[in-house]
Amino acid sequence: MKNNEKRSTVNAEFRINGLFTEKGIRIQEKESIDELSSKGYGVADDHELLLAFYESLYLLGKETLEVKYRNNKKMDFQSLLQRYESAEEDAWVKYLAYRDLRSRGYVVRGGFGLGVDFRVYDRGEYRESPAKFLVLSMQEGKPVTVRYLTQVLKHCQSLKKELVLAVMNRRGEIVYYSVSQLTLK
Image 1 (cartoon, rainbow, N blue to C red):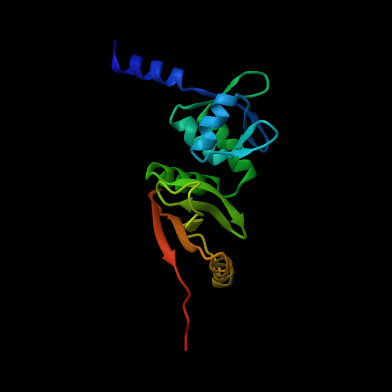
Image 2 (image 1 turned 30 degrees about the vertical axis):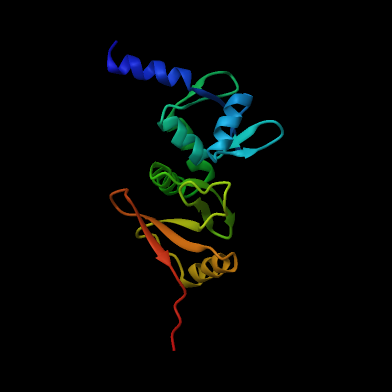
């Protein structure tokens, strides 16, 4: 058996089926829901699991997830990304930050609002302790006001979390910056 045949056999065994909706990708099979939930993916929604678009893109890229439209037609990575970009201005940046954090072994969940994109749990601490970091995704060269950053930082500090900026540089790489309070006298 050739290597690529072996890979497709393995992926076929672990393929999770999802249904495209305007809110995200719905997972309906109980076994898939349990597996994904235990790894920190999705949000439970009436006996189903709803995956965010960035989670779905990540799993689709790993060939773990197969997404279909209601008419049972398969959706590829590019089609899903285009749908996500039509709903979210910084879709590509958020996806790249999410993918990078997941590939480093972190469990990444949706943020708390107020500009925070993700909650990030230390390795091995998901479900054991609260998220340690809140991540704000941004693109190099795209202006952000100091007032906005200050609001986000105060929000993070009120939750006793560390704010991390995930900045996509011009080469499409994610660079991380820890943010703390600056006091001028």
